[in-house]
Length: 325
Image 1 (tube, rainbow, N blue to C red):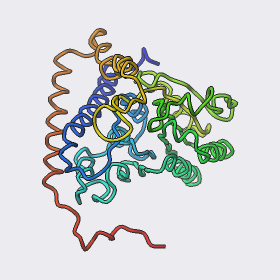
Image 2: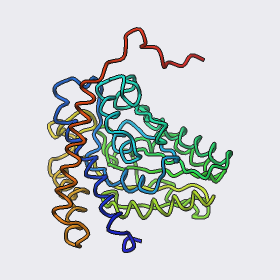
Image 3: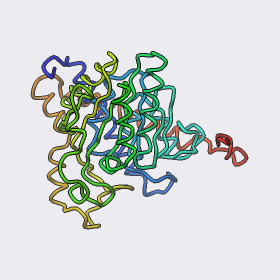
Image 4: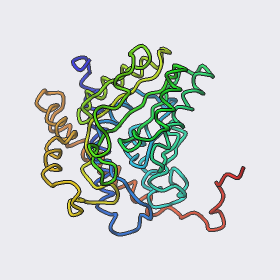
């Protein structure tokens, strides 16, 4: 499948990763000004996963995300202006300024919500796939979660139900090796149990999460199965977050992971590696790359200006979108 990916699609995948990276770096560069009144969790280093998965999805398909969800939202077609406005808690944000970084929602593009609860999006995404099946819609539901959520009981309940009902859901396990400051080796012994699942019950694949083509290939197989009614899939993407758990900048000073480890993974940057590959193979020129950088930079500047000049929610409407049962 890798050889069959067209140059246009290769450039599209690169553009999506580059755009996510540049947006994250811009957020990081301005966060210290304290105008963004929301905790942030950077997606730097994991861009290949959102880009590779969402390249197979249409606006009508669903995704459920988590606290580290900027990349998921953008790759799914979310508005950059509305994302940045949400970080500034403005009325023009995708969650009307009420959600902040960890609670992005945009049903117009099938982004059904991010949850700050570890594992909170897993049952939601599973329930969405049940609704798809019951309505015969032919859609797909994708759930993004990290290695911390992989230890939550709700994942096992959800996957069991998805297998039982053969639901059109794809579980994307973004294994970035740390849950806050806890390394995965201190929390998990060996591979996760779903890697032993009968292939007839669920498609399971472990991929290099820093290779957008590996992710793209596996996600394509999973989406095809889901649309054909062949049940759920579980894809583990092995990757690494290059920033701390929350906030902006390096966390080396905290001492829970060595600088040598971070440097090793920085040398495997998914964006830089894919750029080098495209240039070497002639699938992209230096001029193409420069054009993309300029276009993305202009879009980012426009989005931040939009956010910074948008109105805050009115005080008297602070409870406007609260649900009361």
